Image (cartoon, rainbow, N blue to C red; front, side, top):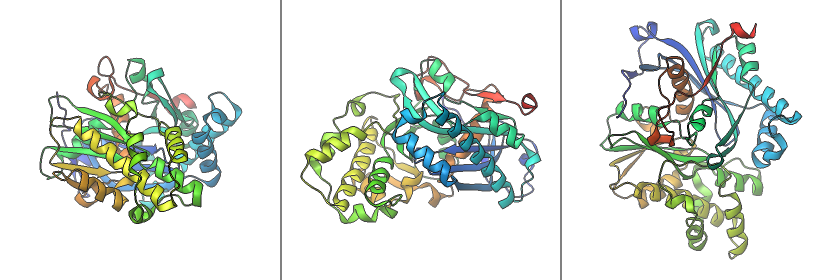
Length: 392
């Protein structure tokens, strides 16, 4: 059955709902590994009121370096190692600094925040093996902030036979219902990987649909030191190698039925092999090829449904890649592609709001994932709660 929030709004300062729900801060680090999305909302796990208090906080240089090393060589930060313990502490400290920065920037008293949703940094995700790993010492975060905190939001789902991802569909569905766009609509988040949520069925449905920004960002950073292709300008001037794109699209992941999820490194070796075996390409052509791969994977995800959506709302870093959006528009020519920021949704911090919402749902004993979103055997309320009082 489809779920809806009782209320999903952006209130005025005197909105009564602000006094009826808890102030919850959500923190999420995406697979780009560059920093932390942090947002404050008022929610009881059912209704949610958005605030203006939201921002993106870069990792400190030493944290970002350690995270990137772990993302590209997981063995360097395997659980229990000295390097991992140090990394967990660095991330917890940066998360605490993000909350402090949010409170300072938006004149929020830390004492008014009653709960935090702490995602941490995903380093490795292998749903077939039933294993996912998010770095970050939640206990350290609680000690630093004094805020009750829900963490390990994926573990219970995987123990119930789920993929542990995506967790966003329940919130994406509410966002779709809160905007005035042609229906049916789907929600596409393009981070390191891409995930999509459908709401035109009698069950909430969501799945990872393929690469997002990670392949493009990683390749460009390796070649030039730049963090990303700004607005896709390099890709827009290049010509994609159709042979490489077609070869990458043969990966069995694309023909698998949902629910399904990906690790950000899933296509890394295949991309490296294809690029080595292809005719030499300049940087712009390679960026165009990787961008086309992401766009075509979204097209394949859309084709898994019997009919395309009238509207596809795009959030995450990918909404800023103008060339990627234009390629999706060309491939999905009957669907209106709408960047979330253009219709009043916080496309860059939606996952932080999601973490706050999931934390409140866990405390309320409400489900955060379903068989139709992750493949779990039954609805699951994911997360573990650490109270500030237990850490004293």
